[in-house]
Image (cartoon, rainbow, N blue to C red):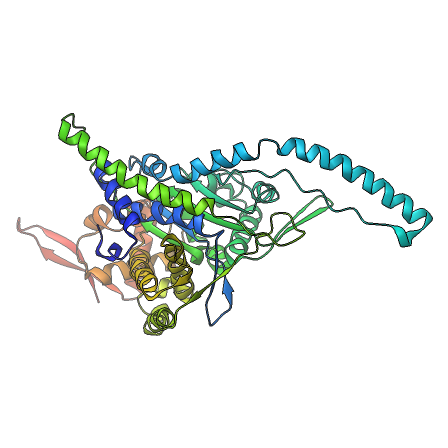
Length: 465
């Protein structure tokens, strides 16, 4: 397990250990499914006081890019039982909702008729009927969604998680149109940005305007890099801030464990599943926490605010101050993300505090969140998403490749670069790769020199200037 995970709550660490035992799950995927599920349960429990920029929601967007065959679906499903059990419980509890709604509708019709009659005869006696309360639903995880779909779901409940182990369907589907229809894609990304910020959700459909206040949406997407590459490379999504609100990890292909049939292996699996069960139990407890709604509203959350201890506030503040230049240093390619590091860290800390059954964010929660954020910063710096053939911004591609080469003090032949260079570069066609190298040569960032190989043949080698 990554050293940065050692401060996590025990049940979270045990869940990560169990995933590794069962499926050899890499850290980059394990942390996302663990925190994604925990955040879904925590986001409807608290807001958090930043002490500097107001009261903030704690919902987060978790993205893990993994190749084909990385057992995304298997790992994803291992962490869902706590939420799924609550869904089943709540759906059973709400089984009479359609009947309740039908009766309320009849009462509303009578009150509406009385109101209209009074308005004609004696307006001073008219009593406006109370709005109908929609049928409450209990579908807390959805995998396919449009702006309308999310809005409709949140008309009848207060929170929802956008979860998918094959989220390529989401980014290449109707809402984003694979990045080809900017209007639809911009509408969806703007809506998701607003949801992360905790703003009211507004949707105009025909003549009807829907405004939903105090709802919460989080995201846990596992997908192949290719399915989100265009979104990450399109400037408008960065300018909107959508990309900077994501916590992104990326893992390589990994060796799966062999199936064993011994009693010892069966015992190891039993122990691993017992470890997972402790995580499920805690998620269940969090999901069962009573939700407080604002009076005379339909599912509008009235969340308590989690405060920070002085020690936690100082710890997070000192970390923020120490990294305030990151936007022009190690995160200069992701300056928008760098500007939001403190808020991401605060939201993770509040999620961990809620998982720990804390009503106040402690220094321990803060230090744990800092460790996790340092992991996410490392991931963002090493993110192998760059310029695609669909969006061949050559100067940006040249800058991206130059940063990659400089970080590694890389030298080698053009052939070696096409075989062992960053993933996004390897996926380009020969024309685009050559154009990027030409740009770097023109800018005098690199040079190509002739050297003599051990077989006495001359080879062209790329060197940094």
